[in-house]
Length: 313
Image 1 (cartoon, helix red, strand yellow):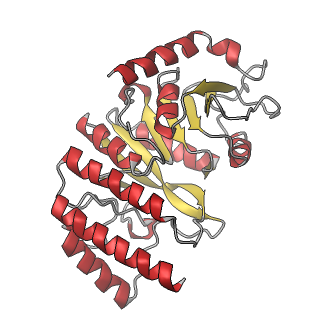
Image 2: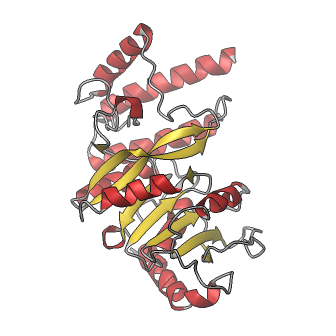
């Protein structure tokens, strides 16, 4: 509670002085609708420059783009020449904590949370805005693709071996829907992503949405700290999604909206990151009442395949 109060107090101070913090003393483009704020937490990676360059091509320029940077990061956008209304804010380090400072600072009706390496074009933003305007109690997400391969981020193979494997894993984890299990969270607290090739309609209600990009109404934002864990923000999107649903909000994936994320490296992740992710996933299972026994089955399977890859790669 003290940490949540601190985040709000800090955001209030930022909001009060926001106009003085704009890096560019120029008006927003005349074509802006003034209805959209963008919140991007970053540690200062170069990829954010490409993300901002793409945003500059949108048909409707956001009223404000809040770039939330850790205090200690030796990074600034002060030299980035653009017509965007960029507001640089310094905040305590941590993806979720930085994003929450942005949420507590925005002034537009609609708020787009983005990671600093997400690419999304103007047509897809329009599709998200059109979808969210259909309901006052929903959040919407685009379908995710890999860049530059163009493959769906959640690519579900359809050969016999892959189908049998998914069926077995689905039974072990307690999948409550028929295959394919897109957008679902199993009884083990393990999520299935969305492969857009299996969406029957343009919108699909899902149990969760990746935190890389999500569009909210400002009145529906979660403003208090919900991820008090140190280190990499593994599975924070699961916590966020379940809390949004507890507020009575529905989460939809929109097929006509496409966002792109760099293709993950094929290298085996470090052992420490694997264990960290499993620990956070277990905390999610405990907090939201999923099956610990099914989760431990999943964790055992994941560790087994990790060790196999480590040995033979």
